[in-house]
Image (cartoon, rainbow, N blue to C red):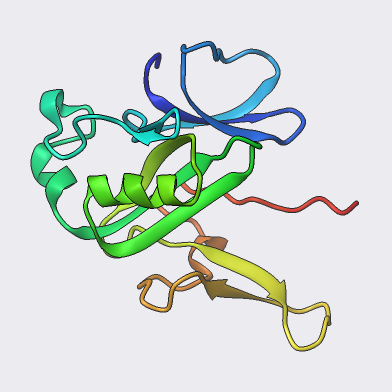
Length: 163
């Protein structure tokens, strides 16, 4: 939907965060897109109105002003992907976290305990074939292997290409 914050993956595997329709369209070169409300960071700055949520651009004002678990995705000027997450954040502080790490565009992902999760995978014990998932933050309540089985929530995985 035009105007909404969108994570776009192209055929080359590049991911960008943008407001769909603002010079970005879903063309045959796009292989995946995920939308969630409106941008919270645009042009390297927090979007005005995050503290009041006038017009319901980010859900209900009650949801966006409460301090809870939140996560966000952004990109910096070089096109690097940025992820921030933590507990005790409102929407204003989530956007500030993104700008603090250099995001020029950013979108909220999930919120509330049990919904925010991030796992990384690394070889276990000295480079053997076994891999083990690890949560990004120790207080994340879902197991690191949450998405190895069917789940009612949407999710994404990023992988690194060998080179």
